[in-house]
Amino acid sequence: MNATFRDYVLLKVSRNKFMQQLGFTLTEINAGEVKGELVISETHEQQNGFVHGGVISALCDMACGFAAYSMVPNGVQVFTVELKVSYLRPGMGEKILARGWVLKPGKRFHFCESELYVVREGKEILIAKASSTMGVVEDKVNDKYGG
Amino acid sequence: MNATFRDYVLLKVSRNKFMQQLGFTLTEINAGEVKGELVISETHEQQNGFVHGGVISALCDMACGFAAYSMVPNGVQVFTVELKVSYLRPGMGEKILARGWVLKPGKRFHFCESELYVVREGKEILIAKASSTMGVVEDKVNDKYGG
Amino acid sequence: MNATFRDYVLLKVSRNKFMQQLGFTLTEINAGEVKGELVISETHEQQNGFVHGGVISALCDMACGFAAYSMVPNGVQVFTVELKVSYLRPGMGEKILARGWVLKPGKRFHFCESELYVVREGKEILIAKASSTMGVVEDKVNDKYGG
Amino acid sequence: MNATFRDYVLLKVSRNKFMQQLGFTLTEINAGEVKGELVISETHEQQNGFVHGGVISALCDMACGFAAYSMVPNGVQVFTVELKVSYLRPGMGEKILARGWVLKPGKRFHFCESELYVVREGKEILIAKASSTMGVVEDKVNDKYGG
Image (cartoon, rainbow over all chains, first blue to last red; front, side):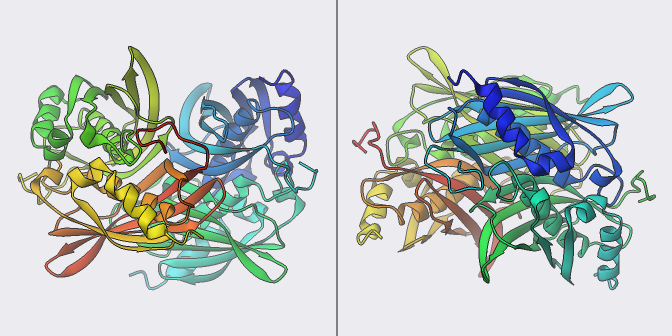
């Protein structure tokens, strides 16, 4: 186990430009599970005025990804191998709550799931469920920040 | 067949706020196939400086969705039922080229696929492949624009 | 709700030849959830001697499908639109226990999930998790049994 | 490249009990692509008399898996990490033709796709399309055949 997993997840969050532009923030970080939220605004809309499927898949990806980051040693990278999202209901409401968790950790990849709820008139309604494979990469990554 | 499918797709594009914020534009619209591109900027980055998985899934979703819109009558809506994205290579480059197409059209849903390429130093490199089910909804939708 | 959903599921089970050849049986049928089991034999093996991925995906499909059948009126058909299976651990053991449930029912399709456990030396170990879209077809189907 | 990839694939085929019970045979083995076929019989049917979704997912899995095996060194194992199948049309006909290929090979996994056609009254009709992640395992596997 990584004793400083919260700091490691927060380091990754701080470097995540797209997450910031989207407006998604983490509200809870546990070992193998994260929670987060996004206040819905007009920039998140698709052609009918609902939350865009791309926003939803992005939140599902981040919830899975940060859950996976909470279960790797410092310096180890996590990459999405594949992600499947089921769109259960249209995204209408004030806010989206996301939860991601590691279903089965592994040496080479973590299987993760995530679910999104909209908050609408005080009620939480499940709108999406995702399943993903997150690759765990111990080798040096030749990236912007030196891994 | 919808004789004015290009106009119908462009109407949907014009209402798509998230697509505009992301910076994704369509460059070609055929019956059952669309192409588009996105100039990569820092706002699209994840924690390692690569294009965010959420940007990639959003582009895959839009490429599939607009391909599906090119094969429905005017007034009929398209919604993503589910989307699976395989992340084949890290997204590094100047630009992303997207292509989406209808694999099998149907009365109730269109099965679609899409693929993304990065343009890097003049070369096109496949980075993602998606498969999705797009629901075709003929009933009146109670949305922002009156369907 | 279908008051005779158990009988309707059992009717579908009785016509399912592949299920019988595989040796999978339902042990519990509730509204929106089914359980079943399969005694593992040599005919279920793949090239390493583990339970074949195709057996696993077939059980996941049936668990999802019969859960969906438990939530439709008599005479309405259920068809798999798409199925994604995550293979969490190798299938080794005496028996497989399957559970399938409807995550979100709908008029046009039911989103379902299923999970499989192997029983090995008295312990239940999760080996697979699936997510699927099950189409609900009210129209007359031109099939072997007259729908 | 593995110079004896055909022999290695055939070795894996010869050990695959479930494939034999199903009646699926390979008809062509190339580097990164395999073809196969299955004569449809009553044991393959689901509750409506069509080919069972579990048969279809099993064939998709095998087509992907053997394509992956054609691109690994002797002694290296391939395991399905995840598989998604889209069921495009009902499976009715005399025979199923399967084709699987490696979309993107890698050190740790091969991304694969497969498609199935039924042969009906002399015509080939696409009925399913699959996308999968195949894990490539170089370590010793503690399996029935000693890896």
